[in-house]
Image (cartoon, rainbow over all chains, first blue to last red; front, top):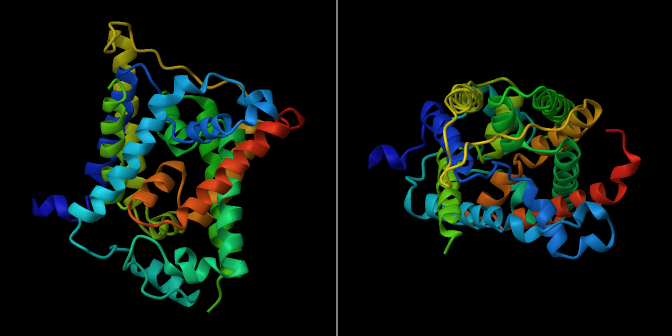
Length: 187
Length: 137
């Protein structure tokens, strides 16, 4: 039980993610979390504006059930399966983030500098969340998948498009982390 | 009732991603800084086991729960859309510190500000759908 409450090592977590993918394959489905964003658009009536959203979204209800489950899973993890341990980040990461003005690095899952209500209620903080979400939503549909669809399922299936997409994920991620974040956050 | 099994898969997925810390903004920052093996270990071991499992499924013609052989549909051919779309996604991933799965999961952990990110992601998907035919694919 103690091991369950502590953070799980990568060699346990990685294979368990594969298991999630395989069980969805077994049910005749796919492992793709970003597809739900398109489904939400269709439910909201986006079919009136673009044919891309005119599809039988009810056939995607199973995936929405996965989303609802994921939210519940998040709740269970912090309420019942946590020993409140801090994130064991590398000391280089802690130093870099401190130099950018972040405090209490790794004490919680997310930095309060970005996700706390205080941060969001500023124009800068609000813009960060809106821009970040927009880029994820736009990019993932343009690329036809996200981490689950391309990095895990696509690479497992040895698909060239997914390799290109993952290279793209890293180009974008490296530009953001190394060049743009240091401009946004300065101590 | 038929959705219960998917709900359970989702719950399991949510727990794994929180307990692995893959939902943490800090871990994504650390990954893009190449300062820890943690995220590479998670993704790498997952893909490695995935390659072996998918290979076995194909070789042995393993059947799904409805008695049909498991089929894995490949992505459409293309290059530009994957590189450009992937890069745009990567910019957002590193800024939000979360891709779509973790976004939902984090709402469950009590980070309600993530709902703003999800709303913006839905908007981004909507805009893509509207201007899709004008983009190179």
